[in-house]
Length: 131
Image (tube, rainbow, N blue to C red):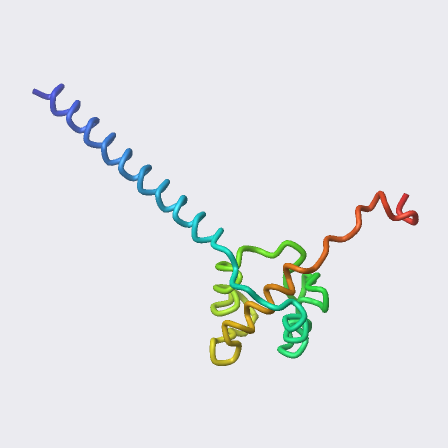
């Protein structure tokens, strides 16, 4: 009887673990799909003006290059729009929250378009002074 009881416990634990792994993988896939959702259309020129007017540059720099003591780099190649939007609306750390009332979704889309438009810096090997 004890052998069957132990076998049942092992099988039961295996089923629970399999269910948890399946659930975890499902959540990861769902999060990846949501994160890859396309950003809403925005105007990069307007976004650049808003980036300055709303004070984003004060912590992140005019070209969104960021700085360790003030704010992280936002461009080039910004994070997915869903993550960006969440961090703007519900920031971590010292950044103030920008609610829909203070920064409408359209303005946020324009700022994100600006961040997407920032070209990557030149390769160090292409800069003569760095050779």
